Structure formats: C-alpha cells, structure tokens
Image (cartoon, rainbow, N blue to C red; front, side, top):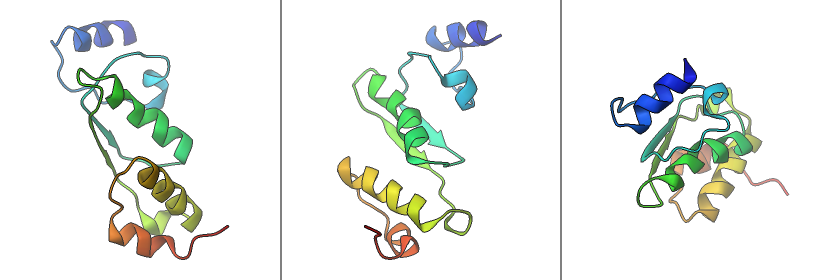
Amino acid sequence: TRTWIVDRFRAGEVRLLVTTDVLSRGLDIGVTHVVVYDYFDATDYVHRIGRTARGPHGHGQALVFFDLAESSPQMAQDLIAILEESGVEVPRALREGAGPRQH
C-alpha cells in the first residue's frame, strides 16, 4: 500500500521510489533526485521537482526528459522560463527547439 512503501522509503529501507503524480500528491518527503520522464506542463514540473528542495540540504537534482517532437513550442518556452528563473543553464537544443519566444 501507499503508506507502507512510503514508510519504508522514509526509514531508508527503500532507496529508490518510482511513482506517479497520484502517489506523490500530498506527500511531504524530501528527496535528493527527481527524474521527470513525462513532461506535461510547467505547473506539474514545478510540483514534481519541488520535492528536491525538501531534501536534507534544501536542494537536489532534477532530470527532465523533454521530447521536442512531442511537445508544443509553448511548452518548451514555459520550461525555459522556469529554468532561467531558477538560474539553471538552458540546454541549447531546448532553446533551438522552442523557436522564437511568444509574447
């Protein structure tokens, strides 16, 4: 069950937790790394990676898989804006794939 596995994770008995948004909503657990396999929108992205800030040192690493062929230019531009606001280097391929910024 959800509670059992989360308790094992918190206790350090489980070191890797693969989950969906359904499981992670409402959980207040700190993690050091988040992998976002299916980027959908900026709001979900921020919610997902926010878990790294709850880690033991107040920061962590996030890896996002972003398929330019499957995403709209606006989605790419939204992700770029979040990365820039966070002071994270934006990959050149993402900038090129996003096209000109829409206002």
